[in-house]
Length: 144
Picture 1: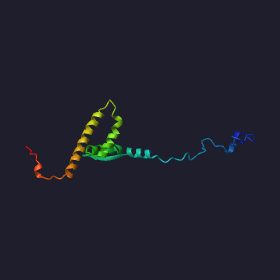
Picture 2 (picture 1 turned 90 degrees about the vertical axis):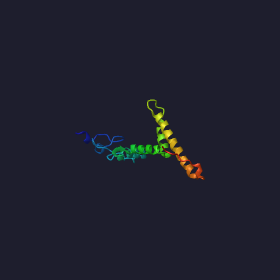
Picture 3 (picture 1 turned 30 degrees about the vertical axis):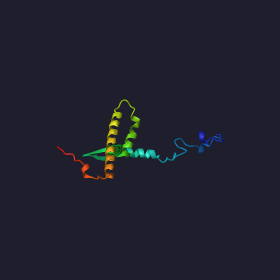
Picture 4 (picture 1 turned 60 degrees about the horizontal axis):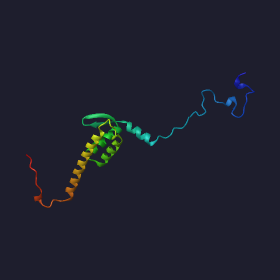
């Protein structure tokens, strides 16, 4: 007699009847664990890795969105945008103390450029606020 049809096979606690046991290759949870909804950080990370076509000058480049954002912030920071400057400088803070790179020198140059932009901007603001009262105070510079 075969093992499944034996009348004397024990049935009880932790011993279900053979006919109701799972067959080989059959699972008790056929659908499996339900999928979790993706985390926000995972979705953002996936979107930042997507490739986009960007035109820089006369070249069309295929770069990641993350790289495109970095390029945009750096170019805006160079042109004097204070928010982009803060973002760029704060993102470089962890790498400032690395001895194998020239980042501190580059940061110093960048800060000097930003300071000159800020000084130029404040000078423009001051000149707009204070009207010239007499034309005798203004001395034009003659070019050679």
